[in-house]
Each structure stands twice: as structure tokens, then as C-alpha cells.
Image 1 (cartoon, rainbow, N blue to C red):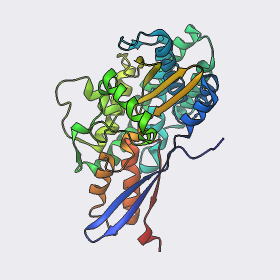
Image 2: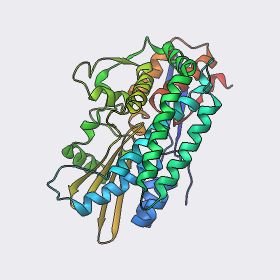
Image 3: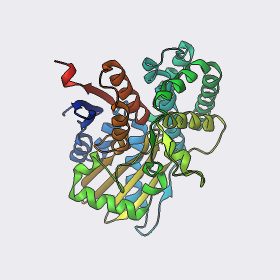
Length: 361
């Protein structure tokens, strides 16, 4: 089996007459879906469970939800809710991923305020417990309830103990506040849970499978925490926003979880007809979509990951990067750090390799 770096993206900085310009190259592949497709449904779940760092619980849940759509739904029905325990595991994975990113991935870019070792240790322990819970064929309700109580306690403690680190993160992203992004670019979860839109996506994927690496809906869009927060209100849904707002929305979702508000991290199952089903899982980064057909023991499979909406040419993220570097032609270190920070705001789990040929000799 081929083992590429599924999270690799290159940014090439070009020096032009009118200043600098960023060019994005996405090295992601469809090998996960293709490998799963070739091995069949049972092996597919094993492959998806092994995707550590790519939200394996969400991946497995999306696949099973797509299977559920094929076998349990009438094609003329809308979407259905999925198992409550699965929803709980998906929520836990999203919350742990969010606090991990804020506690670890963003720390190299902050000058002051590091997250305490106590919180990092508890975070690691909870991630291990969640992994064990997710592997069980029959989830222990008492163990899951105890885990959720401990997770909520961690988030409350994190906000209480790590105020300096949280302040440092907010301050780090203030440098981009002069860059305003169009609120029309936000991709609300309800937009991609529409059955007719999903059928359109499926038709495109059947004709052009590589669309999964650069999905668009009236252009490149931005899924994730801010889109979810904005989707829950009528006021200001499409207002302009800053790069810092993308990070602040993650903090808001952590607070909502600690307050016991309903989870936005849902699992949905939709039958699209012709033995096609789609599983939709709302992850920390946005909506994960698994399109699945099982017909006469033959499997067809497409994955559209939330990251791909932003990490493509002419996306709002690349536009923001180009606005940032417009006047930074002589500040190499500042440019590279800034580009990495912007990428982190959109998706901190994607590795960015910044190349600047003119400065590399």
C-alpha cells in the first residue's frame, strides 16, 4: 500500500514587479478512498480507523453512516439522526482535537504563555481513553458518561488555568486584523446537508473524482467553527470576518461544550438513491462527507474532507495570504511565520511547506 503524506501542501512565494504572490500546490491524493474501495467494506473500516491524525472516529462514523443510508433508508426520505453514542464519540473527538490544536499546534507561534504540563498530560490521557472507547463493539454507557464528565472538567480547567496561553493565542492573530474576509465564503453545515446539493456533488464525483481534492459550491468556501457559530444566528451570518475570528470561534465552541449546550458535531445519514448513501460528520474542521455505493458486492467510494475547501487555488485562504505578503518583500522570517499562522487559522492539522526560490539562492 502506498503511504503518501496525506496532509502535505506547498506554498511557493514568487517575487513579482507588483510585490509578492503565493501559489498553492496541494499534494494530497485520493489513495485512502481508492484503497478502501479496492479492499471492500470490512477492510475499509480498518483502514479508516488507522488514520490517526485525520479524525479516525469521524472517518469510521461517516463510513458507517453511509452504509446505514444504503440499507435502512427509503431513497425518498431525508436525513436521519445516527446512534446517540456515536454522536457522543464524534463530539469528544472534535473537542479534544480543538483543545489539542490550541494547546500544542499553535504554541510554537506564541511568544508568551505556554499551556501547562498538567493540562497536556490530562489531554493525552483523555485521548487514549477515547481511543479505547471507540474500539469497543458495544460501548459501555457508564464508561462513556464518566469520560464525558472528565472531558468537560478538562475544558473548564483549561479556561481557568490557561488564561495566559489563551490570551497569547488571541494576541498572535491580531496582526491579521486588517485583513477582512467576505462572509459569503463561509460554508454552513446546512448548505451541504441538502439532499439535492449532495446529489449534485455525487454526479460531479462520478464524472470527475479529483473534484474531491478541490470541492466548490459557488466557489471555494470555508467550513468549520466560525461557519457553525454563524449558522446558528440570523444576525450577521454573512458579515465580513477576520482571520482571528476563525480561531475565536474554536474557543466559543469549547465554551459551549463546557456549558452543556447541544453539540454541533453531528452524524447524519442520507440515502441518495441508486444504492448510494452519504455519511456526513461535522468535525472540528468542518463537514466530512463519505459517498458510498455497494451494488452486487462491488463498492464505490469517495471522501470529501473539510480541509480541501480551503486548501486550493483562489480560495479565501490564499487570498488572505496574498493580502498579507503584499508589503512584506524583505521580511522573510515574518512572511513564513505569517503564512503558517494563516494556514493554522484555517486548518492547523495541515502541514505547510513554504518555499521562496529567490531567497533560497
